[in-house]
Length: 131
Image (cartoon, rainbow, N blue to C red; front, side, top):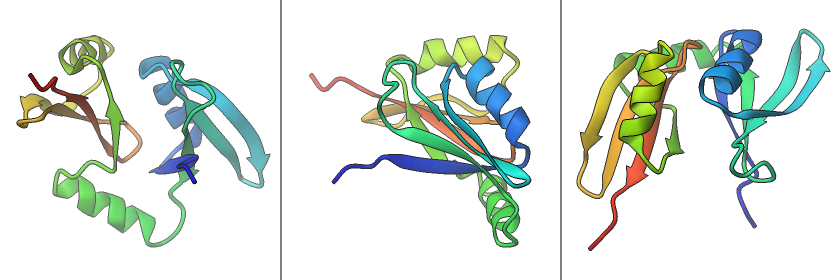
């Protein structure tokens, strides 16, 4: 068994698709119309056959209060890996991305947290090499 798909709830699928592809650099995998919405997944360009991220509409009544509570408490809803969080932070800041936590040494990892413009906080993390 392996993890195949996970998702983030987004307030606007079109805006999310632009942000996750054009700004973050993910690649569109699926965009299938399903009624008012679509089944939209993106993948890492480094692993196009790997894990998919579903950009899921936040229309369920429980989702928006859940997202708001996470953001209010500064809790990321997802974490993406990076080989160099400092460089990724600089690149994304240059693209206009708003960080709520700059790169921070957390012992065994370095993390940073940004606003995905779709109602979520997202963490990027880099495992530190153990010497």
